[in-house]
Length: 403
Image 1 (cartoon, rainbow, N blue to C red):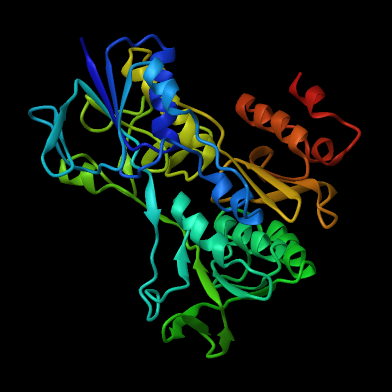
Image 2 (cartoon, rainbow, N blue to C red; image 1 turned 60 degrees about the horizontal axis):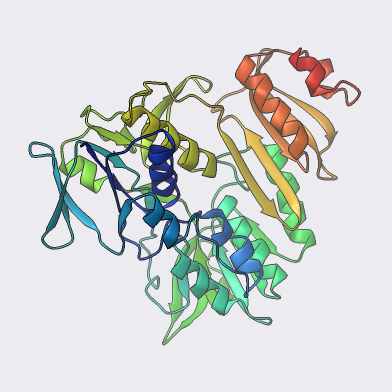
């Protein structure tokens, strides 16, 4: 009887073991995770759990679900080594598990800043349930929260803090918000949105150090100004957890390198989720994605391929964010484009912006247009090339453009 082991009990790991059983695998399944919790999804950590101090936290499945499917969980137990020769992993101090096939869904850890003061109480990063609860506990009316980083996570934290009655200052070292993922026009819309809701957005401004005695008291910015603060949250991205893979001699380059079937450089070892560097045919290059969609769907594909499916994983990347009641969704992950086309009213937060190379859509962003985005993803998957006039015309439905 084959034994499949999954290392990493987050969203990707949870969906992987689910998919193994759903695809008919009847052998032994072990899921090993460093966190003490059953698998869960991370998006609520910066949204619902921060905006509402009493919001319940939902797991992907409860304990009974794993018991019914004969999935053995090893939680709160880090894996310290992979021995590819013996096909065994070292669990904790001295435990071990044998595998016939292994899946790495180790995700990432919050990227830390190497500046003075980050060890002070009141300075936080957001990656786990515990992080979210600690941040939520300091979001009290009258407090002043400094958020370092104007990407998705930083802005979601800022919006949640404002909704809880905190004063908020966002420090972003770039010249626009969400600049790593989105075009300038969208960043400008969200700068206005946050300022309208009372946040102080400081662009082209980094953080020099954090000061305080027994607790954080102020943040000193790169331009020398001091911001009094009751808390600081640093959201400047994640670092993929590749140490296990690298120590085992697997190919690693900004993530664990996998092929289109989610296989690593060792054919018995697969990887999925935030940790993978993979080829995306719709984007046309290798990349590492930090998204709910990729964590779930690549993990499902990897599990199915471990069980013999041999099906390439290929999807148009999709991301979303909710801030102050505005739903932002984007398809694609373009690094270049030569023209854009707008539909609707972006300034009113009800519209779409297409990024194109010639007439090919390489990216699209929707503000409060979730239904449209479902069709746009299908347009991009099918390789359709509507004209600029068709994309801009609200009277032309995307369903018609798919025909």
